[in-house]
Image: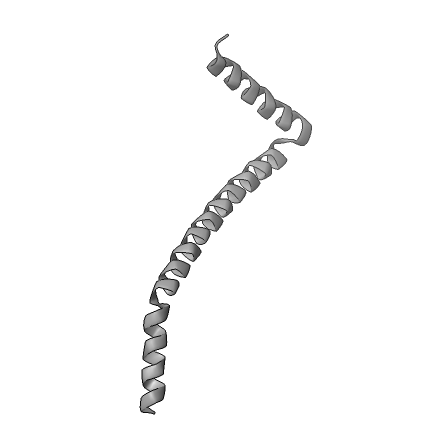
Length: 76
């Protein structure tokens, strides 16, 4: 048996055992949960990238902002 056939056989066996143990409805709920968890993890990863990008942008713009505040306080 080559590795791709072995992997397919093991996956099919696991799914059959899940259905036999918990039933079709609970197995579908498990797959839905795994799907939602993967999607949520992707959203959290993208949020982390956005947070890092915004932080870098704020650090870059901070001196200009401080200069503007000093000028406004000086004029007022």
